[in-house]
Length: 119
Image (tube, rainbow, N blue to C red; front, side, top):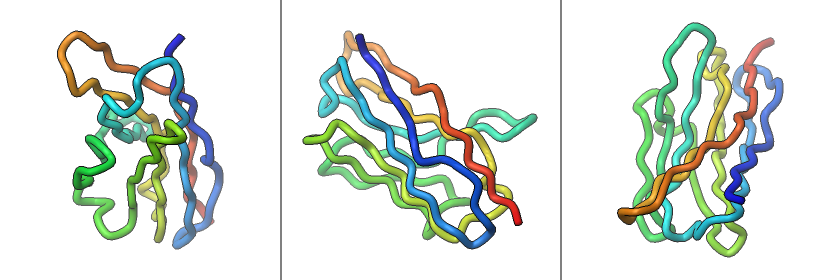
């Protein structure tokens, strides 16, 4: 059974850091692009960062460029989101998603992890 499990969320003060992890199982991780989304209260879900494969360049939404870093470890079937210089507007539920790079495969979502940036 395919599964994505996020961890690492929590409460942090402005300017602080958190590292989110998303552990995958039940599907061929290396054949999937991995993406982090977030959804703040009352707002639509937005793409934060993505990394198509271990050899490709990551992409970021403008609001997190220079502060967030996405990476993946295909040996551990895990994708990470290192978040530095956090701001209150980064407060949201963060979700990881697996997007298939080939036709015929489905995508998967994790259950989300809460990140709250507040003093």
